[in-house]
Image (cartoon, rainbow, N blue to C red; front, side):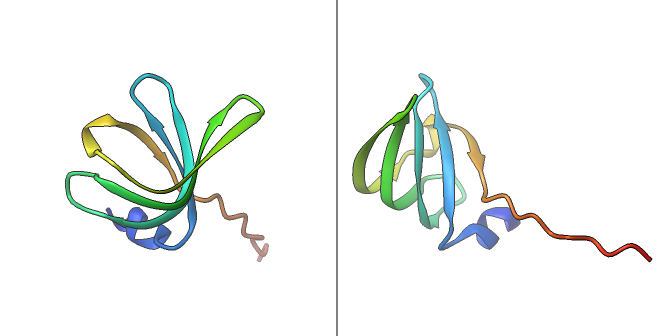
Amino acid sequence: MELLQASLGKSIIVKLKGGAKIRGILDGYDPHLNIVLSDAEELKGNETTKLGLIVIRGDNVILISPPIEYKSEEKR
């Protein structure tokens, strides 16, 4: 849950049962992994379908991918 907290206000991708993938800005979540996304869009291959503000029930969530941050590490 700490990772979700750090991802609030950032873009995430949610993979759902049935294979659907949804990308959007994480606006909120609860302990059941119910998720609120704004500016959501469904990803299908090279196509996207705009969905707007949505709520995803936690029992449909298979995977949540937080934004990937690349940090340059300094060698000592």
